Image (cartoon, rainbow, N blue to C red; front, top):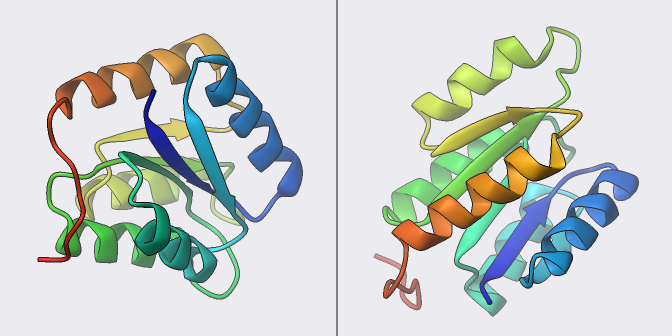
Length: 132
């Protein structure tokens, strides 16, 4: 069982992803924005982060960049429904800023859970207890 932090400003999406990942056997923490997410990250030290791109207070690209800088081995998945310019406009930027994988909403449950499991298997034996 891995610890996963999910960030999204849409509560219904947060709860859907939480249920999906808990069903796959993971412990899941949720946050409505990057600011809240960073606090939860420091408290719980998850193995993987799933972040939406467009969020209030602290958006996903900034959060991904900050996490990648502080925890280079952390596995990160970016998700986006697009906003004004569509997901194709944001997801490549998320990749450039450090996301290991990107997914367009709506998520394909099987594909998404398989990607999470793949990234977590690459992380076996690693933990993120200290900031670099």
